[in-house]
Image (tube, rainbow, N blue to C red; front, top):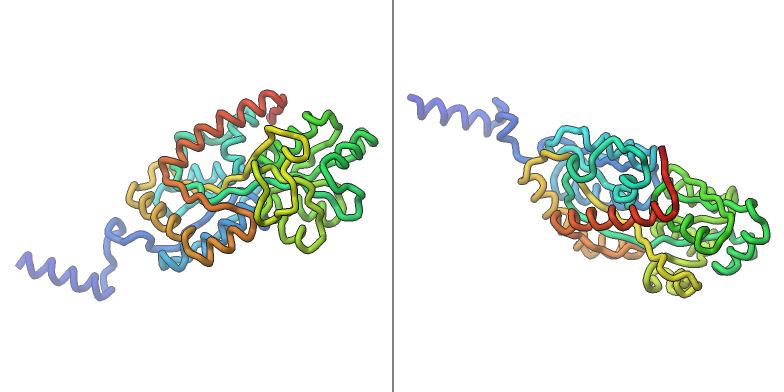
Length: 323
């Protein structure tokens, strides 16, 4: 009798008459939120939308990008850190995740305890740009222009403490020029400010900037990579421009709230690694100016620890602090 009861219950569940217990539902059983702690249009948003579309197809559930810009990414990161650890909230971050712990006097999350690293999907160097109307065709020209008009020029960046922002500040310190960094709420608005000639110079990640460079709406004068990019082969590195030791890149990482089940972490790691190997995805990501990494959770965790230490030293040397 007991056997027949269990058999009947199983049959009813299979037929959809009785719902299966919540814990028995395969993951994912409902839509997933992909938090991007920046405005739409920036490199993190671009990667999130590429990955979100692929995850939707592979997981069979809608993956919705949720842009939560503000405080250099801290607002969105904190929102993800406080979310239920059930696999239905995923966070996509840039390098602000490894910069903010040193840049801000206090952040509303613990980067080591509140979130579980899944993967650093891809990274891109930063690029210095100028509006085409200016007679600035090199870093040397930019420095000369800034020295000729102290306090006159500003440079747009994606946000305080992002690697493009730190790159701009570090160049100004190294070159001894008065070049005020103007942080925006993401790379999209920062790029738009230079394209619209609201500010003469920009320092942003390559992916959201490259289309404007190729269209002639921005002029690229240097990238922060160790070697030239295949995407912009005619643009020199900062080292080639005479400023060595200023290499920097913008990572694109995925994390989930601490406490997320290991099975979910493993599933997401597997799916994300596979997505970055899809030829059409790899081609699109590369054309945008990224290079693919697709690291493991262990590798990404080690990278986070290393880069928090690295950027902490740069921030201290530059005397930067945000309250």
